[in-house]
Length: 298
Image (cartoon, rainbow, N blue to C red; front, side, top):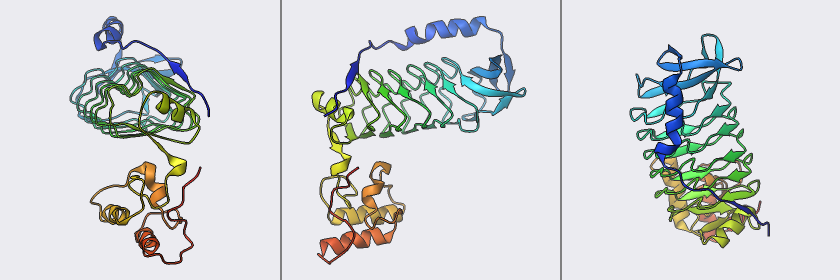
């Protein structure tokens, strides 16, 4: 079994984290365009502030002809009006600073594009309305307290590019249920899931995440042991899984992305009514060629 290193940090209050950044912002002189305060660094535009003229924000690709390359520390800190922000429109965005969106209490979802290579400390801390977070394949680390106190966050899929998960990264996420952690993660910090008592780490047997979950008494689900057809990941393949697929197709509920492979009962790469039929045939003990009821493996 792989062993996983543990990182330790102390939780830092929002005021302490952002005081220096606010002082720097106040002292700076920036150009303002479309509500974004920015300057040019290393040939690209760096965003330092936003005037909240709209609750739905689309990050520009360029400002005064310069590619937007960074969202600076605390740039959107405490912007309580923002409900949605589109980052992928900035094709050259490579970094998101510490506390960049900290305290954006109305923000509902975030999609970090593959171009982003680094996300700073506490970037989305206290985004209490954040329900979904999609992490791009460019980042190698989830910094400490990245999603700390994101009360509404339910599911997170950590991409294969990530090697470390910082301390308290998902701490205080009371609604967090499923977190998929790949084999690539070799370091998980102290208290990464502290206060997220309903969280289940979805991982593979013998992985660092598996070992971390065991050592810290965190609930876990071994994806290689998940059975084909177990759509709701309750450990059984039964009529409830058929119902889940039917409700998904009727758009009454969505199958969790982590379990799409298990829901694809006929192994054709898509979710449709034939998957429900395959499970029904399995339950009726028909002779089928689909591996329904068998462990998914890696």
